Amino acid sequence: MKSPSPTTLPHAFRDAIEKRFPGARFDEPLSKHTTFKIGGPADVYVEPRTTAELTDAVRLADDHGVAITIIGGGSNLLILDSGVRGMILRLKGEFEEIAARPGSLLDSGAGVKLPKLIAWAGERGLGGSESLVGVPGTLGGSLIMNAGTREGEIGDLVREVRVLDRGALRVDVLSPRDLRFSYRASNLDGRLVVGALIELKAGKRDDIINRIREFQQSRLATQPVHTHNVGSTFKNPPGKFVGRLIEQAGLKGLRIGGARVSPVHANFVENLGRAKASDVLGIVESVRGKIRSEFGVELELEMRILGEP
Image (cartoon, rainbow, N blue to C red; front, top):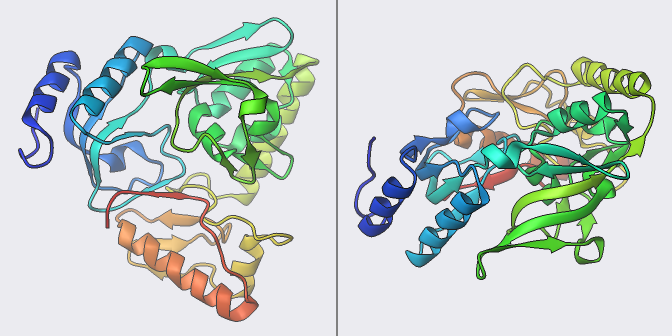
């Protein structure tokens, strides 16, 4: 195991993490953990598999003043080339489990990938989430950003969200009155989401599976699903589709370094193989500037940027 320099992490914290989490990885390249395949190292990367392990990781980090960041599937993240300081957590084990509850409810851990959750529900005759099957992230990340499509958002389905209270080191349950979801945002940002209760609708299994396949086929036909990207780069401005604006500005195929605006869907930026975060940021600024000058529209990022410049 490669250890970071003493100036990066406190010695006592590093020793405690190595003892509690023998599988912890120091100086772990985060390009291995994002769909963009871009990003520098984490000081330490840990995969808690139980609530007890997560609680211990949080306690150790807080006791030593070490920052914590949870990543899900890494499907909406641009991690900077310098990497991320502190501890990166990715929820595994019990956080990847799904269970049916009475009344068309699903109890899901935050680490479950959304396509898996939707397929699992469909096989059991539970629908209402089919349009989200093209969202590649985990449930936790999807809740934080209120992931969605034109047909609906994950926030529409939520009946409770479980979060870890860092101060009390306990799991709290948030009801709908505690939650606020808006376009690609929620008041869960900054919280340690560990699971949720999702309400679906009972229906015919075959009908639900067919709808899932239709949404999958539509995504295959309109999005660059086989390239390294993070999905939508920018949020849609009110009343407009940002992909169309970028295409009208003649920026489809724009390339900087190893990154380019997708020729399939202009709101996707692709890593052609050796892109750096700085290449992607160059495209972001070029597109923003062109759309501002051509249409007077200020674009807001949908992807998240993680790390220090």
